[in-house]
Length: 150
Image (cartoon, rainbow, N blue to C red; front, side):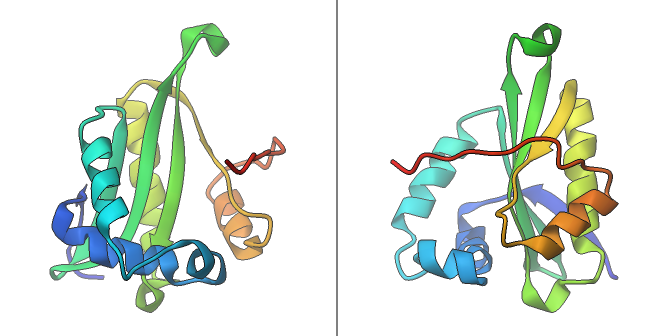
């Protein structure tokens, strides 16, 4: 598999990240790879927040995966911190290579390092392959998620 590096995303990574976000039927409807301005502003906000971890997986200088890990501190569960995994994307050429597993394992390990008691994520109902993937990694579909578009 070659040397894999998982590191914080930088400005130079934004085009590759946005291309991966847009490279599926859902992302194609909601992402705009032609205008990176809002993504660059978002990276600035994320980079300034110590509870946000936008990372990329890089092999041989090429960005091939990404995810965002957010640490949320709260009162429930006896004041436990939890983490939320968002925006998991693997480059089309790398799907099925085990990279997704490595990225999620990184996120779980980082969550432990951040003293989180729970790791959670959501996945669109239409992503049945992703659901099987997360279940294979030990995640349980224990809740129903709700969203309100603003």
